[in-house]
Amino acid sequence: MIKQPKFWTNKNFISNILLPVSIIFLLLSKIRNLLQKKLKSKLFVICIGNITIGGTGKTPTVMFFAEQIKKLDFKPIILSKGYGGKLTGPKKVITKHKTFDVGDEAVMHSLYNETWISKKRSKAIRMIEKQSSNKSLILMDDGLQNNSIYQDLKICIFDGSMGLGNSRILPSGPLRESLISGLKKNKYSHYYRRG
Image (cartoon, rainbow, N blue to C red; front, side, top):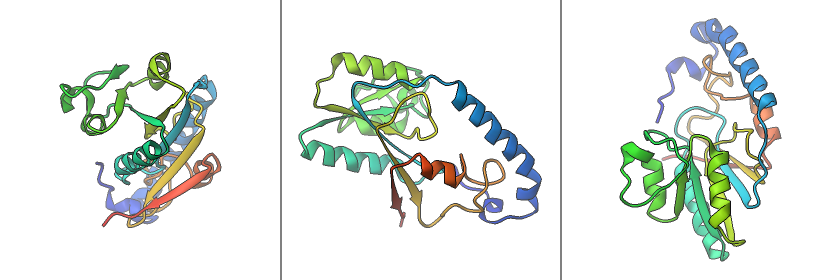
C-alpha cells in the first residue's frame, strides 16, 4: 500500500510546484487512452477500482462481490495485474504459487476463486473465454484507468477517511485522473471507509 505524502492533503507550496508535472501526466494519459484498442469480452466484465493512489479496500471489496455473485449461481473469475509478482502472465494462479511470483492479492483471491494474473489483461481475458461457461463473469481487481478492455460495470471506491486529498492529479495530488472524468465513466460508486 502506498502511503500518501502530507502535501497531498491540501493545496500548498509543494503541490503547486508539481502542478505542471500533473498536467503533463494527464495529457500523456489521455493520449495513451486514445491510442489503445478496446477489447469487448464475450463474458460480463466488472471492474472494481479507484481514482486515487493508495489502499482503498479494492481487494476486500472484490472478494465481497465475488461471494454475492456466487450466491446468484454465477462463477466469478478474478483478474489481477499481479502487483508485486515477477510473473507477467497471462497465468492461472494455483495454490503452489508464491507471492513473489504472482503478488499477495492474487494468492489471497486464489484461495476462494479462480484467479488469473496478467500485465496485459486482454490476453488473459482471451484465455479465460476459451475455458469458461456462460455462467462465468470476470471481476477485475483494479483497472478503472485501463481503456484496453470494455468494462460492463465499473465500481469506483474511495477510502472515506482519506477522501480525495487536495483533488489534484499525480504527482501534485493523489488522483490518477480527475474526479469528473473518473465518475463520468463509472455507472456506480461504492464508498468504503476503513476503520
